[in-house]
Figure 1: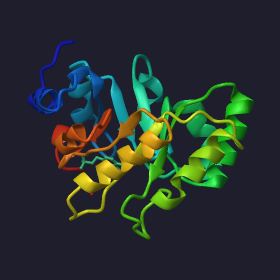
Figure 2 (figure 1 turned 90 degrees about the horizontal axis):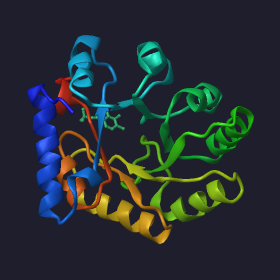
Figure 3 (figure 1 turned 45 degrees about the vertical axis):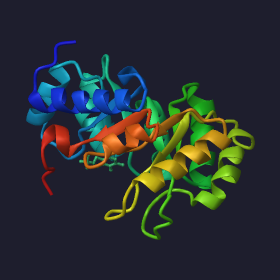
Figure 4 (figure 1 turned 30 degrees about the vertical axis):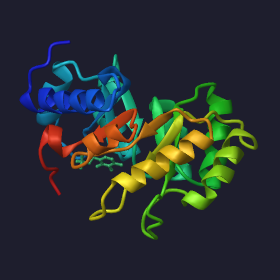
Length: 219
Ligand SMILES: *Cc1c(COP(=O)(O)O)cnc(C)c1O
């Protein structure tokens, strides 16, 4: 891999150091480069430097950007998914990290059957129980995961969370890890630009990093 942009080298170094400091292998942690709302001029150098996993939060925006550049790239949907977009999402993404309600599970299961293709799925957990935030609340996570697997026949790869802004993230990462462990799930998508090293220490297997790689998003 030819790594050149300083921000990519820096983020990968910090992941590696955090992994080693907690007795883990750097290769156990996947960097998901969150390219949402970034101009292509900022994304292109990171792609050219060998980064292959990217995260987007809107189905339409992701398809417009990546449809012609899909080769060798793993795309993850990390934003909320409307069930009426399940068809496009199942067809386009390698991973969907925002499965958080029954209606969406039904829609995804129907599309997986129809298309014969299944993105890897993460259940999003609202660890802070914030009313405005997506995700199942921790007390309902076990039952929801069981329904996704049993009733809807979908495989779950792991869990995802976005801790509340302005709170120490550690307890939220620990809670997600605990829910994953008791449900036999090995993958944890947690940690963003401000807290990905903490997330790695708490067992993240993928971190979703946007602004630390590409700079502040245009709003
Ligand atoms: C935007 C976003 C990120 C990246 O946030 P940064 O703070 O820019 O690293 C990560 N995860 C989700 C779900 C996001 O929506």
